Image (cartoon, rainbow, N blue to C red; front, side):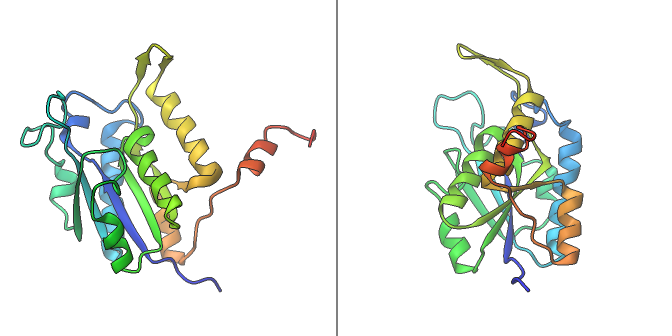
Length: 209
């Protein structure tokens, strides 16, 4: 039988800015994702899976995530629960400019379970950084969320962005699953699997390939 993963749950940027601040999460409903984040932390504590909390601080002059402001503060769904390690970051990946890689190595972690905000930015960056570092990754899609965007390249709804990033992440970078599916996998000591680019593409082709 395969070895049980040595997991850590990484909870990224669950800060008031995304709930009551200047960047309200658009999809999934933020209250739903907050509940799922809380359930994921509780399940991790029950299974002795260490929890890492990540907090974003913006560079000077940026109008969001200003250190010490209410929007910068961690949401109570995180602060009212215990966690094992804290990371403050200034760039999208929770690994860049932080001690996360050293902490992961020191604790023998081989699998990161990632939740938090935003799916398409800091979550995506952290997942890809982890994969490049040789770690397995799981992503809890209902314990995360995205914003709508419009810029010179076009526009997309929060739902479109979140959904497409989930599909792409599952194709190679992470096992994408709901919080309930992850909790069930913990109970069964199962290892959720990510897909492959080729298999993900072939399913769109019917019998042509």
